[in-house]
Structure formats: structure tokens, C-alpha cells
Image: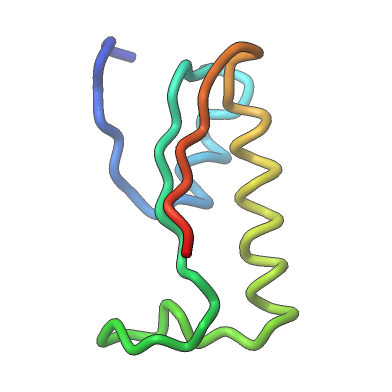
Amino acid sequence: MDWNKTICGDNLPLMNSLVGEYKFDLILTDPPYGVGKDFGNNSDKLVKTDFLTFIRLRTELLGRLLEVNGSLLCFAS
């Protein structure tokens, strides 16, 4: 993988494909907030249990991808 590269894609399959091969110094994420806001799609309309599962799965993967001294920037309200 190239240095200083932005990777865009469907986050769950993308992160799964990177585990074990790459570690990152910086990960930036902007997950849905789980408050039912209308973003013009269904991205923020999960019921609480589904929302928590959605966040947990991704958070566990982020932990596996982050370097020991890396930084995770998460936009949240």
C-alpha cells in the first residue's frame, strides 16, 4: 500500500480485507450517530440494538487495524 493514501469503500468488507496485512498510524471515521436524523438514506435509522452492533463490529476492526501508538479520530455528537 502506498503511503499517505486515502482508502474509500464499504467499510466493513474493506476493513476485513486489510486485517492482518496492514496497520495504520491514523484512522479517521465518521459513523452514523444513531439519533434518527434524516440524511436522505437509511444510514441513521437503525434501532438501538442494531446500531450498537453496527458500531461494535467496526470498533473491534479499527482496534485490530490501528498501530499500538496510532490515533483514532472519530466524529461523533
